[in-house]
Image (tube, rainbow, N blue to C red; front, side, top):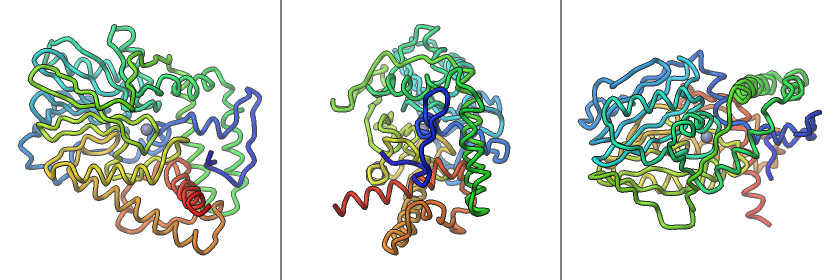
Length: 381
Ligand SMILES: [Zn+2]
C-alpha cells in the first residue's frame, strides 16, 4: 500500500480510523469543492465549436450543470463546480427507442434527480439502469435517488463494497478528530510550499466531511464483472458498450457508443486539469496505458470526461502530456536519489499547464509521484 504522506506516522483518531484510511475514503469531490469558487467552466472545448453532433445550446442549464445533445439519442451532463455542488462530476444519458441508460449518481440525490428530469424532457422510455462509472463519492452519493425511484444501479462488481468500506466510517464521525491531523500538517509544514499543499488537502477533506455527513449511502445492486467480455446494451436503435479499464480507482467503467464515436469516460479522463491519483487502487502505469488505448479510438471521438470540458482526441493528448511531465520530473528525482517525501512536493507546474486546476496537491500530484516511485522500485527488485 502506498501512503499519500509516507513521511508521517499514521495517527489513528478516537473513532478508530486512521488519516490514511480517511484519505483513501475521500474522493475527487473534496478537491473540486476546494477550487469550486474560483473556476467557471465552459461545457465545451474550443476545438469542438463546429462539431455538428453537438447542439449549440443545452436543453437545460441550472448553473451547477447543463445538459446538451451530443449525438443521436446521446446527451452529456457537464458540471460547473463554481456554481454549486449538486452534481460535481459530469455524466449524461443515452436514450434509444426502447430504453435509456443514465450515467452517474452525482454528489447528491438532487443531482441525480436533475439528470432524470432532463431525460424526461426528451424521452419517456423506461430506464434500464443508472451506471456509476466508479465508486467515488462525487459519482455515487446521489444514488439514493435511484434507489427511491426503483432504478437499477449498475457499477463495477467491487463498487458497492468500496463505497461501504470507504464512506461508511465518515458518517457521524467527530469533525475535529477527522480534520485535526490535516490542521496539524498545515501548522507543522517545513516550508511555504509544503504549507500550501497541506492547506489544499485540508480544504479538500473539509468539503468531503461535510458531504459525507449529509449523504445516505445507496449501493449499486447490478454488479458488472470486469473479467467478463464487455457488456453490450441494446437500447433500441442505439447500442452502448460498457468496458473496464485500469487507472483511476480500480473500479472504472466507460460507456462507448462505437457507431457514433462517443465515449463517456468517467474519471479516466480529467479534461484540462491535473488527474486525481490518490486512490489505493489507482495505477499510474495502468492509467497511462488506458489513455494510450483511447488514442486508438477514432480520431473523431467525442469524450465526455468525468470532470472538465467535453473534448476530442486533443483532450486525451493533453492529459497524456501531463502524465508525461509528472513522470519526467519524477524520474529525474528518482534517479538522483531524492527521497520520496521530498520528491512529492518538488514537482514544478510548467507554463503549458499553469491554467490546469490542481485541486488538492495530496489528491493529484503528490500521490502520482509516490506511486511512480513505488512502481519503479517494484520494477527494480
Ligand atoms: Zn474519481
